[in-house]
Length: 196
Image (cartoon, rainbow, N blue to C red; front, side):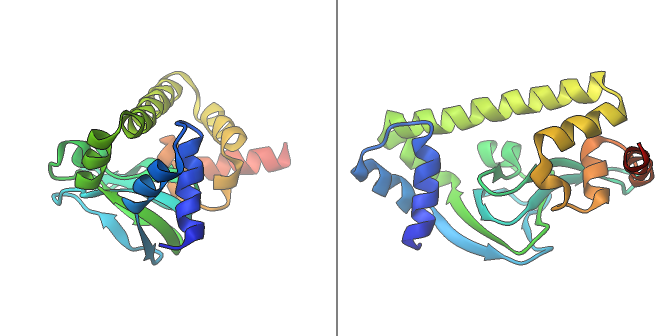
């Protein structure tokens, strides 16, 4: 792993916990750099997700495919975000989601075993991963509430306002699927706003 790469994850961790130089070395050593090509899968249904991924460069999506063959985007991730099939990763049971690169990407991966070892080695590392989990749960709750209480147009407006960097990174059908609407409906919303 390059110094630049390890400093990226080190900087990120230091936002949440105060690590000594030695702790930082131990922490960053648990991550391995990996390059993935556009459309490459990192997780697939029925296989256990053995890693979680921190994105240094690139864009990824996690999605499920319904009975009718329609895909439903569960998570989008770009630089400084994490992604995996968390249910599979946390409980080490078969995945239900696909996790796929939408762009050629550079990632840091940590295995379930290495994460457990870090947590056991220091309360600071355990605190870091707990904070990640708490933030993830809060984010998912906000997303569920938004989907239940806002119109499609409001959901799109909130997405554009909060995540402007994602709008041009993901294809329209992916954003539509993430927001719980058809691509055609999203097109109508966007066209309406352009004419606005």
